[in-house]
Image (cartoon, rainbow over all chains, first blue to last red; front, side, top):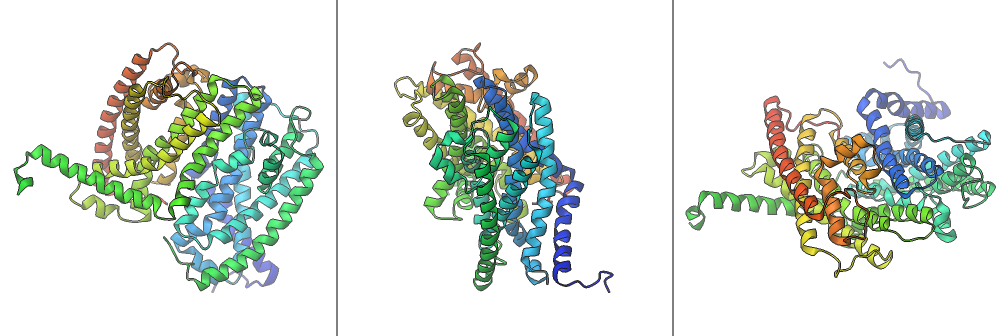
Amino acid sequence: MSDATPARGLLRTLRAILGRSYPRIIGANRDKSWLFYDTVLPLLGTIAFVYVYKALGAPERFVGYVIMGGATVAFWMNVMWSMAAQFYWDKQGGNLELYMVVPCGIPAILLGMSFGGFVGTVIRAIAIVAIGSLLFNVNYSVSQWPVFLLVFGIAIVALYGLGVTFASLFLMWGREAWHMANLFMEPVFFLSGFYFPVRALGFWAGMGASLIPLTLALDAMRQLLFPGTHPPFLPLGTELGILAGLALMFIVLARFLLKKMEYLARREGRLSLRF
Amino acid sequence: MEAANRPRLANGLAHWWRTVRVAYWLGWQVESNWTDPLLFFIYSIARPLGGALILVFMYLVVSRGGQGDLLGFFVIGTAFWPFVIAGMMGMAWGIISDREHWKTLKYVYTAPISYRAYLVGRSLAQATSATAATAITLLFGRWVLHIPLHLSTMDIPYALVSFALGMTSIMALGFVVVSAAMSISGEAWRMPEGVGAALYLVCGAIFPVTVLPAVLQDVAKAFPLTWWLEAMRRGLLGDNTVRSFPWASDARVLVILAALTAVWVAAGVLIFSYAERRARVLGILDRESGF
């Protein structure tokens, strides 16, 4: 007999979300190697790009761009490896079959993964920004904190919506999932302007890249962090509006694809396809 | 019985070479047969090309469209770095995936083959997958960015010797990383990535080591990869590049690269032998570390 009270409806969903986020918030911090790798690996890449700008003799604000890009890398890696490709790992570990039979359903599991992943990553991203800024003496002047937090919040919703969308697509795959997550690293860092202003790509390429929520989110946050010096891609209000639209679109798309792909995966027997 | 009549050394070498070839074939299958050739080709070039484009746009944003020697520096670095990722980190991922994903390590290890030859074959297979990225990046640099990569100004023999030494040193470093992967108890699969990121920072892959703090410049000098990339730049770009070691002549760069390669090969063999023996003594050769 379990001590837990049987829950239904929203309460059950909330419990499932908290339960799935627990290993990501608490469990991940118990293994210090994860903390080290999640913080130090993006930081090493970030420092390398800082030195590129130093070799080029770039103005100081570019160092700030790179450090923000490094923090964003932590979020993107979390979304690709711990959201999109997570069901691949779960297939390897045998958890996916369990998720399929628990009464809360897959959406609650994914929401828990998103929430836990976000909390875990935001701590690492703050560490990257703090260490990077201290190492290279970068100053930020946020003029509108509420707008900054609004941009960040909407971007996170859109980003994890994209993560759930990818997770449902990756549900069908075996080894391809790992390779696809790998594929979406440097090309996305490039298209989203992780290390340079996205305006440099040109209008249409930038608009295409804006399908990735981080593109406009980074540009909007840079406008707020470096007012007057950052060359904006679009006006701040427009970027905020598009981001909100992306967040809504990815939530709806994720919901639709999850149902569709779960059905296909069950029908084609791919839920337990390990390799 | 032709084989029986051959000298013992020749037989050993033939056996070693056969293991390398079979391991190469196996590694290639593992690397490439998850998809069709076109997607595999796109997959092979997308990441390195994305990395090169990041640097190109960083350069263009700062130089406002100007042209300079640092652009060639970026192109050569990003073109050849995939060999490090594939050859060195790939060797480590090979053993980790054999051990923890495919669960075949114990069968491979107990087969009557040289395990070192097997690892070299797996590493070469990974490195082969990097050649497409290297070629595309160089072509992109030559024809799109107009980097002075002209056959007439290249020192081809110098570049070829440097490349051979570089590949040897990559595999030597791979054996060191594999040794670490055999020894650590948790999350071994992330360790090669950490080593790769650290080397990317200190080895002058994307910027001249002269911009690093003095202490890191000394660290950079200890790795053959730094000298290899410097030699490749000198061999392919001649005088049209920024140099990590402006005080060293071309010949001196090559001699130091050869010496460091020899040192790291010896270190790789010794460290791997120690790690292998230790793993067998402790019974941790096929211990899973949370893949």
